[in-house]
Image (cartoon, rainbow, N blue to C red):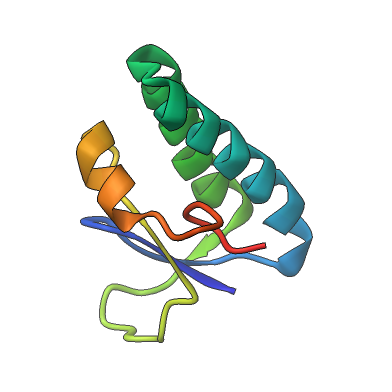
Length: 92
């Protein structure tokens, strides 16, 4: 799958990493619902770091359609809340 981190670029992540990303997304959703700003920052960082660790960056000039779009590392809790679907940032 192709994952875009806003303001950074795109990574190609194998489907095998989906379970770990989904777990972090669930944690992020829980922290957002409880208003846990510290946990939100920690888990958002972990989610983005996991994409970077598991994925292979695409060249800057590549314009592949992104299957997932994740917020920038400095996104506020309110900005991320506006991006959420019913299932969090990562469907499934």
